[in-house]
Length: 367
Ligand code: AHR
Image (cartoon, rainbow, N blue to C red; front, side, top):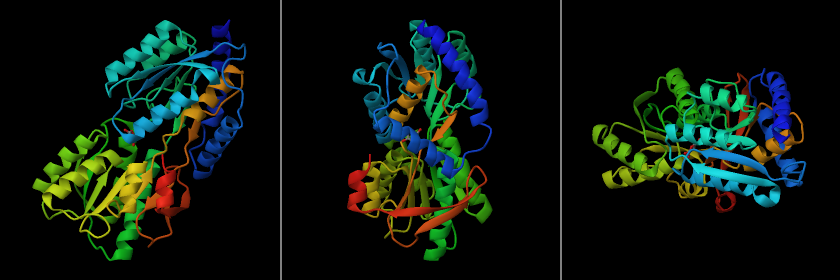
């Protein structure tokens, strides 16, 4: 009975998604989607099954590679608690794509009511999503995107290309303000093939190409502190005295890069010779922004659990859901020299967005 109802809800949602998906994302639609989901969760909108039974949800999480990931796991586990009407089965896939596909197949075999996936990589999904669809199990994707299949009901996450574009726009404006004439950048990328790595790389590269910046090297640090440190150690040897910008695609890589630069005697941050840019803006990252070691940090918002639970509650109640919901993500800076940045976002809209000057209060409120 529950399965039949779910299949009906899924087909309704799929029909609606064709409408919801037809336009590109815009800053205003992102914010609106986030706000409405938050509002309904905070107001205690009905969660769980309509018949009083717990809704079973299988969640195939990426792993445990970063502070961001810990915040994401906590957010989903809190939103899918038993007292909110859910029975959550959580699998940490340890950044292993084969393990993640196996976890999803196990959820299908168990016959859970819904499957939530945070895809490690953006491709290779169509077969297993077809299997879920045939079993009548709706799939919700969070955080990273699936780019080679449309067989999921809804996605909530970040516009990673906009994060990269914003970093580029900030660096251009900052360099102009500070009289920095040449940019020689080293990039430490995230996990290869993840939509977070692809979007941030492409967004920043667009600015580099348009402004004649040199990207001396771009290697993966796998979104980990150890990875960031070992890539930066090798960069410090190969490019000694030749770089003035380091872009780390998450905070943990930036912490590792700092350790490597400290050991190599490289001065970075607002009083140094190297501008350090990061993504995520977790509490530990914003502490580094406050102390001036990281110049700018572009938030990736991990608090997606309530939005995801809201989507599932709506599906269970037979309601339609948005195909895509973008998280609201502010940009943080160490120095109070620029108030905002303007750029053309990934949807082709010209936007002007504020830069938040980090204070202790901002750090205290961070995730
Ligand atoms: O997919 C989100 C990214 O994955 C975050 O930037 C990073 O910290 C995490 O590991």
